[in-house]
Image (cartoon, rainbow, N blue to C red; front, side, top):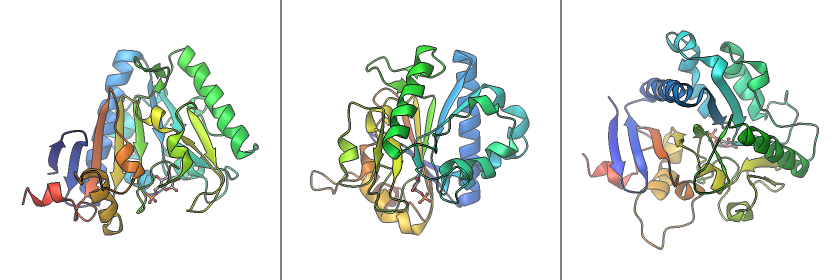
Length: 266
Ligand SMILES: O=C1O[C@H](COP(=O)(O)O)[C@@H](O)[C@H](O)[C@H]1O
């Protein structure tokens, strides 16, 4: 059973005994949000990330989820993508396709991958344009408090430096408030060219889940969640704070091992 800490401003922090328990809780959570969105809106607009997240979503390909989830209503996007060909080992699209999308009956026309024949800047502009069309038809909902898209769910991983999507510490992209999608050409983690949702889009979602495993991320989890006062170093993950939505952290015990809020429960 996961321990759940409801923290003011930092959302619901769910700490799992191990990765298997985390993966089951994550699959239940996604399946439930999908059901609610399909009932309320007729669609489930979900944005994926790359990295360890995709293997942690693997239970969705298994029984009962592969049969009970209404995959035909899923509209799939990427919170970030590396500017490489879609069949390149670094592609977040390829990772999701191989690990998830090829194993469940999603509709190919509902998969909005990023155009891999363009430069980073052009691809970011085009992805922003595509999102605008889908917001017009309300396939992706719109925020009540800004003109931003309101995804039913944005799924994020987090790097050991605290980066989420392709928003890295001390990078100018963190300050982009006008565009929905931006690009970078100097990512500290290879490959250097990436496109990414901006913070206003992430923070306009109905639901944001940050999924983190492993002791190498424990310090970054501590900096992103614990209340450290004004001296706290800038962590992109700490800037994830949905204005009108719900934030849930999915952690295994190793990732939570430096969390002060967790220590207090022992
Ligand atoms: O480069 C990236 O890294 C993050 C974190 O990846 P992880 O393997 O440490 O979980 C990922 O969320 C992001 O989408 C990806 O482009």
